[in-house]
Image (tube, rainbow, N blue to C red; front, side, top):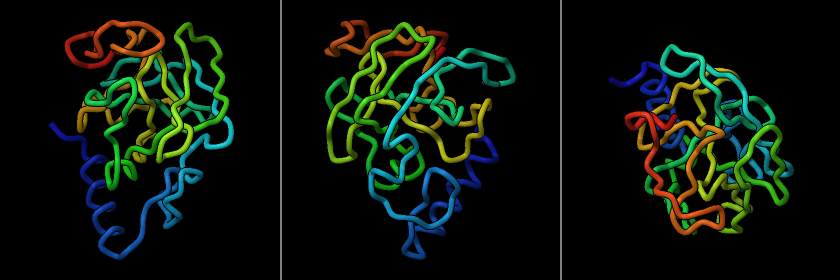
Length: 173
C-alpha cells in the first residue's frame, strides 16, 4: 500500500520536472541539482535517534537535521544506482569527512558523480524528501529501507562481507 505523502510527493516531483525544475532536499523549492544541494554536503554527522516507523518507535540512523537515513537495496558497496529523478526524491548524504555519534558501524566516503557520498557499513545513505525529523515515511518504498545502527555490512564493503538484505521481514530493521 502506498503512503498518501509518497504519492503526493511523486505527483509534485513530476509537475516540477515537467516545468523544467528540480526539487531540493531541504524544502521542495526549485534549486540547483548540484551535489551541494543535498543535506549535509559540507559536513555530515550520522547518529542514532528514535523515529516513528510503521506506527512503532524504532532507533534509526539520522542526519544532523534529524532526518531519517535510508539505504537502497540494489546499490553495491562501490556503486550507487540512485540517479536522475530518483536521486531528486532520495537525495544522497554527502560529506568529505562524515562523523558518527552513538553508532558502532563504519562510515566511509566514495567520491563519485554525486560528490563525496557517505556509506554506513558499505550502504550508501539517502534522505527522503517527504520525511520530517523523527518520522519515517519512505520505508520499503521504491526499494529504500530505513538504516539502523545494526545494519549488516554490505558484501564487498570495507566494513565486512554480510549480505545487504534487510533484517525483520524485509523492513530494514
